[in-house]
Amino acid sequence: MNYMELREQGWLIGSGVIESAAKQFKTRFAGPGMRWSRKGAERLIPIRAAVMGNQFDRIWSSVYNSPPN
Image 1: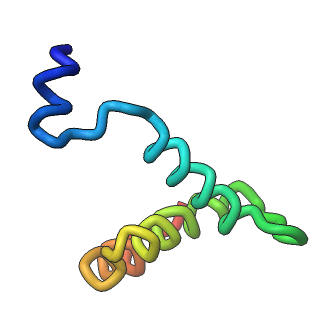
Image 2: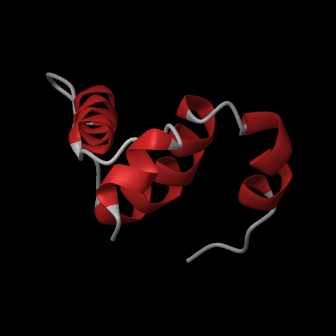
Image 3: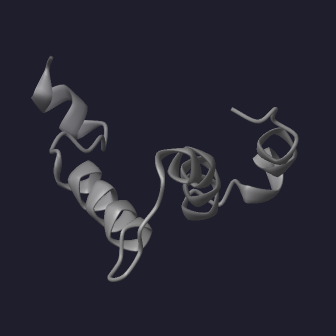
């Protein structure tokens, strides 16, 4: 990768933003007292990701209408 060129174009090249987002996701998904079965977690993760990514309205129908596991 040409880091200098990417930085000049305004791209973030560090991992801090991604690490922070992952930490925020985990903290809000697995807060104190929260316990999830694997099945429950698998159903909730796409919804939580949609909420955090401001994509809830766009993907709700595909998550809501998905067949049960």
